[in-house]
Structures are given as structure tokens and as C-alpha cells.
Image 1 (tube, helix red, strand yellow):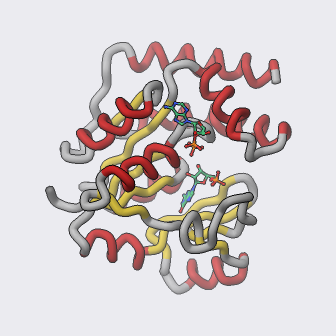
Image 2 (cartoon, protein in one colour; image 1 turned 90 degrees about the vertical axis):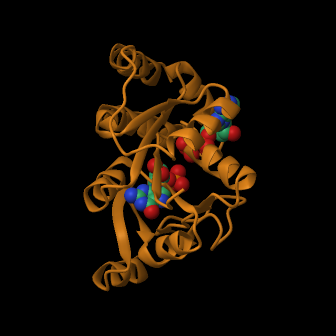
Length: 211
Ligand code: ADP
Ligand code: 5GP
């Protein structure tokens, strides 16, 4: 196994954080996780240096100017970025580096590194996506509405990702990511994927209006 960057993207509630955490716990010798810097405030239960590095906007902008970030992007009015030093450290230890990042960051990584694999994660049923997002209980109703609006834009970007992994059963999704992490960075689609994605966008928009 040659260590590489494995990007996990998903609309909010899609399961990227859970999948990344499970992979690290089950396969600590194969996967490390890059802890992003962000200007957003910590949520209940989040720890500085473990979930994120919680930076002031001035510190983040200084990091951008000094070229500390492999990629960075805005999400929900806050800045998020992957530190080059973190990625290098994990790759040097001989493990793949998991990045839990949004779609613009994923596009930057794809452009920078031809060997990086980008994976888009979604539960098969849009109602399940909404249920999981609501069930997580970490966002207000307004934030959930905003995240669902953004989800529609993000799913539109899913065609740019090498692989799509459905997150219905967690174990199956984790094993699917494990398997494709050893495969070349090429675009692989199931013939049913595109029609599914089109229906998904329509159904998710309905769900959003129903909230
Ligand atoms: P994301 O990081 O993409 O926003 P999370 O990993 O936080 O999503 O998952 C959203 C919610 O769904 C969490 O409460 C998580 O525990 C739950 N979840 C994730 N994957 C599954 C799954 N396969 N089955 C059931 N619940 C799941
Ligand atoms: P949250 O605030 O829910 O933790 O994350 C919001 C979004 O920011 C998610 O889509 C998450 O994947 C993304 N994100 C987290 N860290 C980074 C990062 O370093 N770079 C980019 N581009 N996105 C990130």
C-alpha cells in the first residue's frame, strides 16, 4: 500500500465524520486523520486539536498567507482548511490520510495531486439524510435548512468525484471506503448512479420545503 490522500465529502449528515472515525478506530495502521483548522466555534463535545484546530480568523488568514494550507474553503460563513504539515506527517508514517472536507476543498486536492482519491458519500434515501441530520441534534432548524440548501449544490458537484459510496449500513460503507482506497484514482460509476442522483436532488428539495 502506497500512502495517499483519501478525501471523504458528503452533504451535512451524509456520514463522512462517522466513516472517517470508524476507519481510524478499526484500521489505525492504515489510516490517519488530518485535523483541520477552522474559524467556527466548537460544538458541545468537540475538543481543540482533536476534532478541529479552532483558530481565530486572523490566525487562519496568516496561515493562508504563509502557505500553510494544502487547501481551504468557506462553509456557512466560516473558514476551514487542511494543514500541509498534518498531511505530510501522516503520509510519512506510512498511512493514508483521510480528509473530511467539503466539495470545493476536494476539487483543490484533485487538481494538486493526481494520486489522491476523492469519494462522495450519501445514504441512498434523501429522507434518511434529513433524519440523520435532524437526529444528530447539533444544528438549529435554520442551520439545518441552510445545510440542506447547500446539500443540493454539493450533490450537484458529486459527478466530479472518483467514487460514490452509499452510506446505508455503516459497516458496508466503511468496508467500501477501505477497498477503494487501494484502487487507482479513476472515475467509476454504477449505471444506476446517475438516475438515482437526479431523483435524489428532486426528493431532497421536497424534503427541505417540508421542514
Ligand atoms: P457528516 O459528518 O457527513 O455531517 P455524520 O458522520 O455526523 O455526518 O453523520 C450524521 C448522523 O448520522 C450522525 O448522528 C451519525 O451517527 C449518523 N450516521 C452516520 N452513518 C450512519 C449509518 N450508516 N447508519 C445510521 N446512522 C448513521
Ligand atoms: P462542520 O462545521 O459540520 O464540522 O463542517 C462543515 C463542512 O466543512 C463539512 O462539509 C466538512 O467536511 C467541511 N470541512 C471540514 N474541514 C475542512 C477543511 O479542512 N477543508 C475544507 N475545504 N472543508 C472542511
